[in-house]
Image (cartoon, rainbow, N blue to C red; front, top):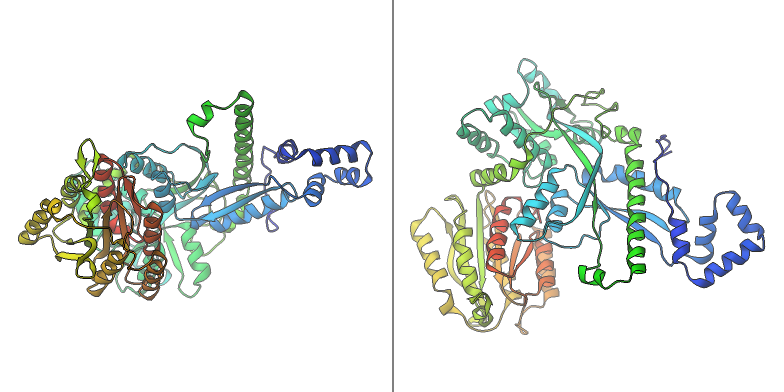
Length: 587
């Protein structure tokens, strides 16, 4: 039972206690054996009641407890937590628990692709498209694609078009569906595709349906959809409520159920595409969280390798048990507004059809990288201040004879060529005490890239960088000054950000400390939540303070990258610019 709702039982049972006993210390084993041989009444009674695990844990504690960490998309986190509570209750006393960590699928995908450890045993994104994103991003960064196992989905939620209940009559005579979106018969809000699986799948579906037409027609569809890009589904719902025009927003059944439960006075209704819809499916993805390197594994004894393999087998068995428990909790899923993993189950909630709806196959998701690149090219409008490290170490040779500053010069031309004429770009240089006591130098104001003289000036500055190298690295003061500067002329119609390129760490002992910098940045974010200025940091070479860079990025909603060769640097800069429209909601 989960919250009073019966669930089907999983096929696999845990052998955690057995594994724990094998790993337990000798005194504990001796005590248990003594009690057993002596016919200890308490132990016999507990065993008879199937409470041996509780007795062991209560008597000896859990020196080797097992915690399964499952990173879950926020849209299904509360549902998975409900199942985890039941799982943990079933295993109470067995030194075993499931810990649910909530994180946006876009953020988890970025972390996995960058090679950052998530500490997760499993990941439940809202769609398999995020696995495609992990692979494409890792490849673009020149990194090995992380090892994962995609198991069957644990739930699903069909895509629908949401509209306020009071406006449903406006759509009664109209054909609602993908074709109507392609034809532009009404305004459609798509949450940012860089961070929304629903929008990515919708774009793939629209692309599939328009494949036989003129490619420029689909470009026009992307342009129309990109005229207003809500940051999230919730933001789209808010726009629906205040708009006077006929409008729909892409959403899932689950999101409408959740909205109506929280906003009964402003209910939404799901309109189902006439051509059939597609669904978000929630795969159960097993993550390889091994910390043993290939070299370490090669030095292991046969016994150690066997123990390692047994541990992994036990981990997979427990994960399979947990995944089965979620899949078997169909009534819990339906009560939360989800269909089961096969698309079945009734949803008894306002705004959606109770009975299951038939879904069609998703369009070619392999084309998503190209679709998103096209989307970005058509819809990005950015305002970027690029801050370049010109400290002495940038003249050091980093790869195949190239100096670090030369690596940046070669990468910058390709990266900045992706900017459109509607974008704005400025440039600062920084080292230490570059202009009086200031560590930074404003060499090109933030201006439109449709200004030929400005573009020419930027190119001349980039070409002259080797001659401008001097001094130590005043990183912290420069970051704070750059963010402050961008905020001074904040443009709400563009994505305002700072991109900082460095090869080292802060070397200005007279400047602001990292701790103080983070406090200042956090205060800025809290005071200006509607005006984000994410900082994207790109480290060149092995001497960068990656930990400090990550903290700065995290404080501002940006991301930190590291590149060790020219190819990585080019890929990293292109990746950083390609995601600039989803800042600060992507990593």
